[in-house]
Image (cartoon, rainbow, N blue to C red):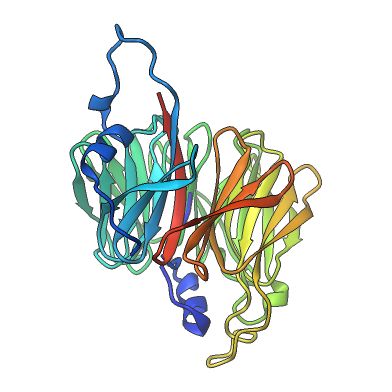
Length: 360
């Protein structure tokens, strides 16, 4: 749904308010590897034997690339060049196309057999794709707008204006609603791209947003730049957009991802880099964390230590969480059954966002 750019220290805190997540590595040959990863031409026709299921994690890198990770081996098998300062990445439901927002280029890069670059508004930060794969919604923080892309033609077919400092976006499982964080939370009807609801008056600044796969609840991270102890994750009833709970964050809640069975939400927390939000403050001691929230009780049931976690994605089978870690320039792999770290995938460059796609 939603996602962003980067910097360390106090400046990183400022940029995360603008929807930017921090994001090289040795460059690998792309040619044949990408043909296997994303190209429709690599998939056999109906008469051929069923192809094996393949799954990849796509990680945006500050250096202007996307690292492709084979989740069976947890190794980087290719890098794909995109635009400047890539932030969020989203994969179409069929697993064949990736949409990457480039905050430094004001574009969206389409990763597939025919690469495309789509101009959007200023400082794009978040991207989400409708469940039928027909449209991509891109938040433009400095333009106060959202670009709606037709994924068939890879052109902007509508622009939603008047959304103040939009950060990230999530689409409901039925495809009917778009939830957009920014100066509050805006809800739009995706059939008409007209507003349905607006929620404001938050203590902090709504950042990321995720919706349960069963469509019942919406989870929004709300870091407070002035007092990190007031940061929290907001749970909403999706039917009424009314508050269900406020779950205390662990300093600076950022990205949110929910397991396929809707039972748990994973939330990244970076440690306060500004000493309570003051300019020039020193980072507080200690690493960041990933919180695990039980969505039935809206309580934190586990806390996993990760140095500087930025983004998190869950595998389609729900067995693992992939977390980008800025400090170690890597992706940390978490076993969701035990909530323990089972591996680290070195990237050699600053990571930002992560998304996972699979297809046969």
